[in-house]
Image (cartoon, helix red, strand yellow):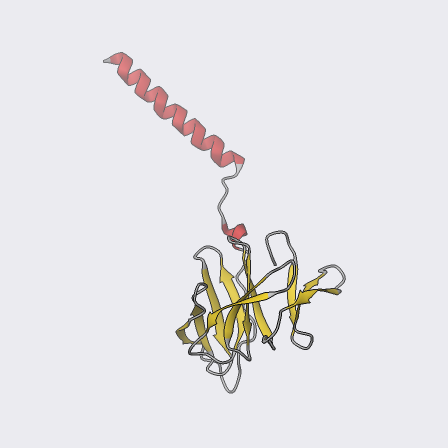
Length: 171
């Protein structure tokens, strides 16, 4: 999802960016990724910078995708990985994460160079791989004081001010 609630998808057969209607499931083509990109997977949106990232499995590159046209631009090779499929962007730290389906490792990916760094193995039993990542809606984690908490804080502040004023008058 982008900041306005648009859900994006990647069609690996037609090599194009899609928007997906969350009420009906209907997909609409935005446009092709462009020449040389054959299997774009693992989309993640950086809501802070308005950037849609993806990974091209064949060229082994991190890409950015224009959400208006679908055109992709290579950021750089992932270097040490060849099966990155899942991406998720942590808006609180500005970190792009991915998973390598072959080695079952969690990765961080430098959004300016594309270079992937191993965080560690995910230790799945048998021959399994992670094909999806997601962060919980981080906006819902922000603590916003309820009105009664603000009122108590205000009353406490007034009480302290009154105490200081009375103490000053008695001296």
